[in-house]
Image (tube, rainbow, N blue to C red):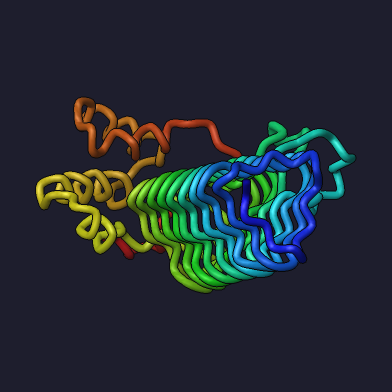
Length: 266
């Protein structure tokens, strides 16, 4: 039987694995599912149609699955799905999806969501994502694997953050950020590649050199971005390292691509 503190309120309809620990003053709703090995430290609220995977640690005053902050939401049966082994720290908020965004907010595995981080409705978060203190995502944002969102930063709705990208602290991100890219600024601009992150994740020098070459072709040459993307796609057609960048840039998107300031190439 789950280890549930006597001050916690757990609805009889909730599906709680026997190995779950629920600390003092937590409140768990009727349509919540919590998988094996999870620990809710204290004062955690989990509501709505929220699925929490195995071995998550959820810290005090986190709020998961409550009504989205979207005036277009009218009570539809939307969901919040959280993967496994995430650390969800104090005062983190994650909202379910809406009819206008596919009905599901999804968070992957092995993430770190620091104090006050906010994941809005219909966001799609990959694996190994880090959101630092008070980083905020508006609705419909996509964050791919291994991305880092710096503290006190804000990401505009419908923006895509590519894999292994990094957002500098206190940045306002209005445009899509390419995989492996680094952006920063009050209105964030592309500031080269996330070279530190690439090295920390074991990318070999040869692979990094190819990414830098592709980056220079994309942002250091003349012509339209579309033309430059086509050139890179042709030049690196069989390159598995560069391919995610090409696929990202060729996809349909609601937002423009973040680019460097003039003369500010990597």
